[in-house]
Image (cartoon, rainbow, N blue to C red; front, top):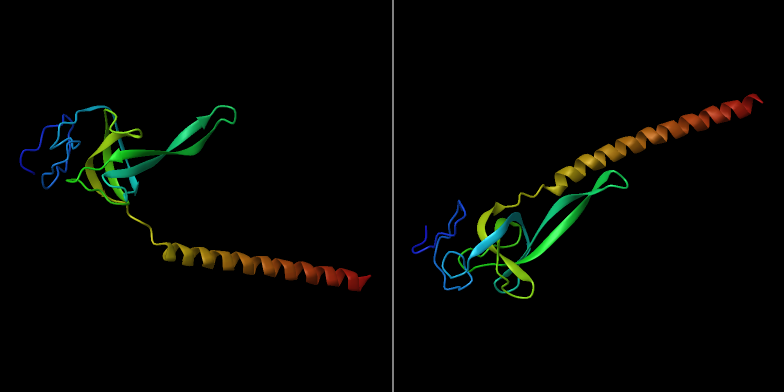
Length: 154
């Protein structure tokens, strides 16, 4: 736990490891948190002290009585002491407007997103496609043979 970290009023499992001089840091600055709290994945973190956090949600369409996937993307303040990178899962909290597009700040880094190895899935899917293609080819040759027998008999 870092020295002189402010109590932000929200339970946070992983407090920042070191202190920072960022005035918009909820732990070491004077920013107050209020309103909504979300969890999402950092999609981009290249901008200075800013990250883009996004997540998917299901939206109901009454006309078709089905759900569709929609994506939410927010620009959030990334304090120096947290310094979340791309593919990190983070918890964000609402605060006063920090700029034209930033109204949230990262309060906790929850870990990295686990990526599924595409090579393993690709090999299984390729084998399944090949098997289906072989069965389809066998059916086609059987139909052709049957058609030839019928035409030979006439």
